[in-house]
Length: 243
Image (cartoon, one colour):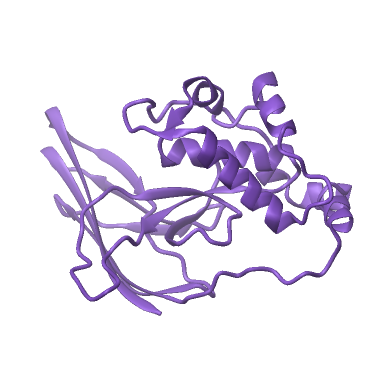
């Protein structure tokens, strides 16, 4: 069990004076069987009032408008989250053949259709289909298939922050053979969905502090993962984000 305090700061600077800036932020950590958010506060400068609601994918949304003239907008979130050590490794309940038949059944596909359809970032090109087909899902349990997809992508691609942008698609990543955590996530989601495995995009904070008693304070950007991967050790921020 770990108790973590997270501070997330987003700062916008404008070339010209802005007014009536309309914003939505999704920065509330999820509470479930693997983590609990005990404290959460969001402030802005200039100060503004929040309208809060849950969207279709159960993200907690804080909406606000800055009416006064401003050249800079700062959004600060502070949360206290307690995480549990729980890998959620599934017990064996069905044979590989039974598992595959279940996930490819009409009832299962219809129930999880929103996490099986392609998107502008995760479109399945012929080249991606060939890559996916090369990863066999014959006579292998779902958990091991997910591990194989993950390790294959990790083997074939190079982490390179300069290679891609936020607009990069999985088809482009396959050409580059390079990318960052967002690209890796998009790629794994694409392969999972092609094999009938519902998958979604998760944004959060990856704990990389010194677990031996040293300083655990550090500064970095948020981290992104493709779920399902039961070993994805994120303080989960946006649990159901549709791509």
